Length: 388
Image 1: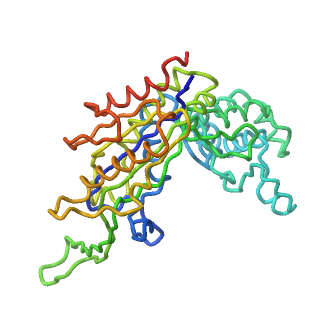
Image 2: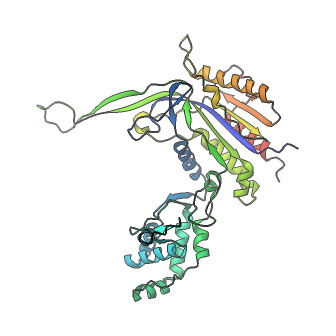
Image 3: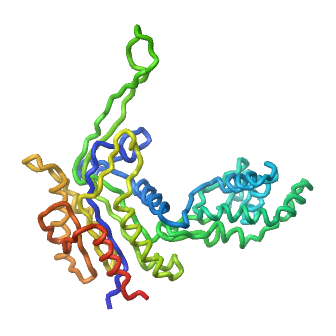
């Protein structure tokens, strides 16, 4: 019996004049592919936009931070705790989890890769944890306030009143987005989560050139006899049709959720919708590039994920009739998928369909669906039906 496991989502999205993802010099990120330079948006950039869109919908929001001590201490200060006691309590929580002082680790030369706590209260690595864990950590401190006051007053670093298990359980807790995107946290045993979602870097289906926009800003309080701008600068932008791809390993997602199929189904459906509609925020106030994909193709597979990025190794050429890049990009994607299915067969392809602004049929992408929500529902039904 063929058991569906992977949900691949492919998108073609036309982005106008924009700079969604900048490099260290402020230029749009790029990649040379097929011998030409394309505009690129990193997977991290679009994943963050997707994660934030998901967290806005879910009750168990996740946060990525090095400021756990600072955040917990701030919660205690709001309860009326003295500043020094609040900071001491928050540090004792991290100490109970196994965090060592960063200076002592460097001094001893014995950095075993464990969690370290710096003098300013920052952890040595970013922690990706449920936002509710910060409140729960503060609640643990409140529970042990009397003991914390006693040891703090003594001026000695006594034994932490918290158990390692209870603190680590909060720091390594999981939310829906952590189950989807995973977490690299080797510093705490049991903290690592293998992501069920893989996201590719988006890139334009065609060659692009960066354009420089020279701009000025006017000083509104200049006297009449003075002319000129108060500020001059330049910024770089580009435009194009982007190929975007992501895949969800449903088996891994269910495993990350301790076997909860119902939650896995809900998260898969929400992820597909969020990934298709989320937009990175780079330069958005200056460009407002809020488009939606022109085409969405979702394939449910039992064998392995399959990206169609190679469809655009040969860069798309704009039509002779100035029809742009979007329409030929959709046709090139469909043609490549059709050839790939003929070459490798479709035994592993459980179900596939698409939705597009193009009125013409796109052979190779399955049946055309009337709307994106219907496309997502059909894919989720195909992969979760019969999973219990």
